[in-house]
Length: 411
Ligand code: ATP
Image (cartoon, rainbow, N blue to C red; front, side, top):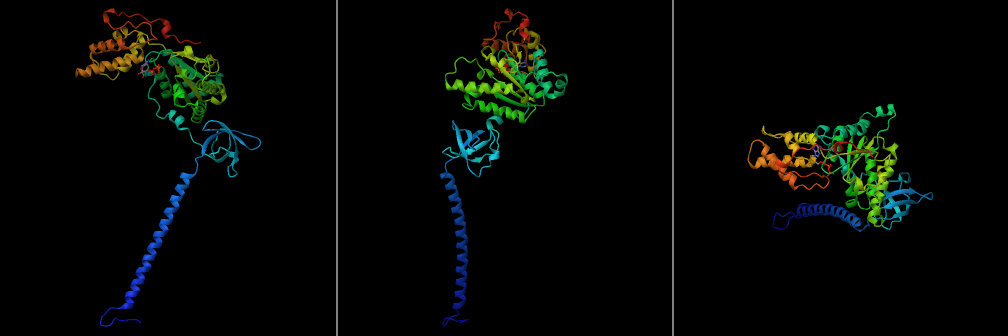
């Protein structure tokens, strides 16, 4: 039939037919490819649907493995549970502290989760070491010396202590009125020793990590040991270590558990080795004596408000980069700011700077400083410091601070 022609025309029927078949075959191939694509899409959506429909697993932490093979876990939803283990779970990985997933009903461990650092705890590690050194801190000579001997030296030259058989203190507690340099000292220690610096704020246990305080404390020290040599700085320790008056409410019991965990860790000294603990508080008077017992925070350092000499140094530190006019007399400024804390002096220097800026001056003058002293010292309410009668230059006479002010107290 090749070459069949429709009467009276050149139309080749067979050629047209085979062209049509070819076109149909191509279309079939296209549709098959489309079907395969749609199948893949369907599978993907089915999988997504399965994920949406499957109940979430519950995270839990292994507490112990019972002799009969069941496991006691602390579920993240609250209670401790005794659960079974699915047969495909590697039992050797079920060690106390391991993170596992249990099914919705809380009846079995279905998976051992990969080890991960708690993001809250991870965030506490100060990655960038503070660029503060003892030179940036005015006064506090004795405190610097003691911190050097009890925290920095054991970290950088541990063999010195081993040779002599001297045990460095486990924990150092800095106490004193606010704004006098406790945090600054801890930062300087971290900056000067090459240690990892982990900062924990006591009040965050009460506000942020409710119900998890004890675990966070454990994790913090786990991280500290892993990154040793390291310094754990616990700011506002009074928030978790206040005297136990009445542990009636669940919140109080929770704070108690956090404190007990901290004490237990401090007691296990051997395991601490390259981990030093520094804590700070404004309220040593309300601290639980248990925390101050030997073997825990056994070195207490009083960080007093600066005396005149220290105030001169603090003024010099904070005006270091400032362009001062010749009439600026830091000695005189120190003499009229009795009762000022380091933070007050920093505020005075900033205020003086702004005053000069307002005048569009090229240098900061003594008048800028006198205005700033007046403003800052009058406004500040400093309940911790008795003598705050400052403000009128004529009335201000320099009075040497008592020696108690600068002495280091050991309890
Ligand atoms: P708080 O108990 O309120 O945390 P603190 O004692 O830890 O107070 P810091 O945070 O160390 O006080 O001090 C606040 C600021 O005051 C510091 O950032 C620093 O600029 C300044 N300052 C305090 N004391 C000194 C000092 N001795 N030398 C230089 N600056 C100081």
